[in-house]
Image (tube, rainbow, N blue to C red; front, side, top):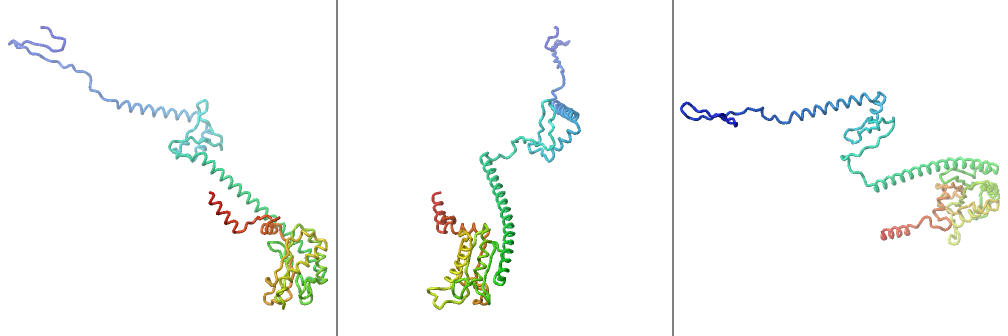
Length: 335
């Protein structure tokens, strides 16, 4: 019998028994897996990265590299802003020194605020900056005006002092510069009185001084306040006429003389009576120096404050406290 194609061979022994032998066909070794492919891919990627690095380094000049390093300074690889743009030739686009790069948004970044909220905040910040600048400019202007006013008031005090010397009234005149303006005190002394005792009738020497001061006040843009003061001596019949009446009448007499001497009638902003409430010499309430007329040459800011306090042209610029409370309560109810 000839061998079969299946690889089995039958042999007949001498005794007549048939022996079947199976031959195992040996092939290649077992399957080794794909680990070598992963290692080869890593090696290939590393080589490609190396060649790319060498190509980039070779294509960029030394000057460009310094510019790139300066642009990447303080950048973090986790910030999402480390991508360098390429130009049309595939080369790294070199940023000019001092140029800013637009940040590329990253998914890892925190969500930004809505544009409406951001615009509102930016607008509020802009308004705050504008207000701060406006306040600074106003403050600088006030300082400049204050310095100018102080200088002008000092010059005015020098002129008034020279007039007092010519009238031999140095002992009756005192002046001081205060934040509200120039304060001029014309007072009695032991030898001379500005008014007859207990009366608003003006004495000749005091009238002469006021007549000489009128042209000086006429040249000023400042407003005046004229205030009358008395000593602490009281009238026997204080019900019909007292120191309030006397101090007010004396201030009005001084105003009348100034206006008759040519000072405009709108120059005087206020005439007031203080009676004996503001004694110049509190240690001796009946002393002559407590009987005085004060003329306050107001600065513009002081006159503006007075206008606002009383309400310019009848307008209630400063609302009464009750009206403000009611207005605030009504506003809260409506809202």
